[in-house]
Image (cartoon, rainbow, N blue to C red; front, side, top):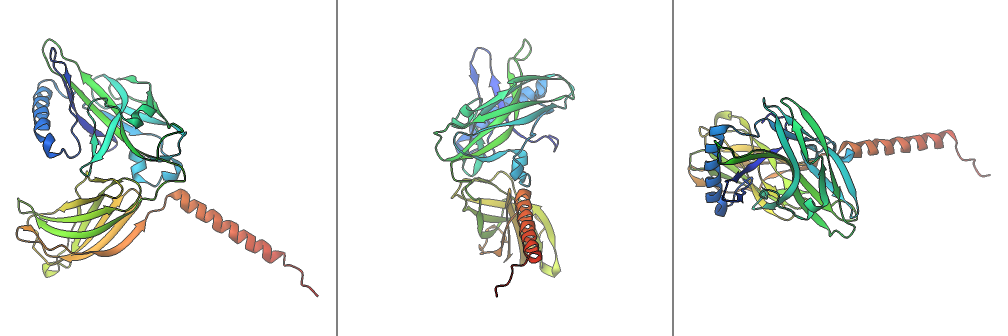
Length: 358
């Protein structure tokens, strides 16, 4: 999928004539109990896609509108990340595009999602939850010619009696290839925009995290791995990304930066593992490692000295480093305005001194 198309391929829905409809969504990181089912679905879907092509090839979706206060937040540019008071209604635009060479009939709908096992997990098909019952999309279906993009609106109306807490969902765009006389299996492909909506009065809970431990490891293929233990100490869910640079290695070697493996999501209070996998030819060390972990506007930079083991798990170390909050542009702008007002008042007071008392 091209970089400009913001979304995630959620899975393939299978419709077998005469056997009802069964749905399966491929989560970011399927749990152990889902591996067999996912493998079976993937095998059938792969065979069908090879036979007739992927009906969703070239389908994309992106968020057009984001809150002004979050324009500096990369998460808010890709997904619906917001805090709403009970009784609030928001209405924003999305854009669906078709970069393929064939016409598409696209359905737009919200469906449930959750954070489980340190991953953002998509519910199958049109499974509802509380957030999706508050959300509607208009139009619900659109036709896209080859190379065409069209916009739609989604509206979320939060009830006045909604309880405090964060909800998760996805706004999906789905296209389907129906079963026919040649193909007895129908295929449905979808891409979507994640929703993270925190509900409650009194302002948004702050986001925060700490990196408590770094553990050098060696995976089964011989590649060195550095695993960071990340603790979500704030009040909003986190989607982790990061990178790792190495320096002061044997003979003064330097390496990286290496990207962290994506897909780690943490609920408030949870602790998870963010791993960086490196080249198997990397010497064992010692190395000075500098790791950056980020979620939206929250960024943590830590350092440590580690030695990668010949196999298995090495000695964990407690990193040292700094925490940094990337302020949204609106906050910076308000600070500049306040500073300007204060300077103006001082200058005005200086040009009109109070009369001295006799």
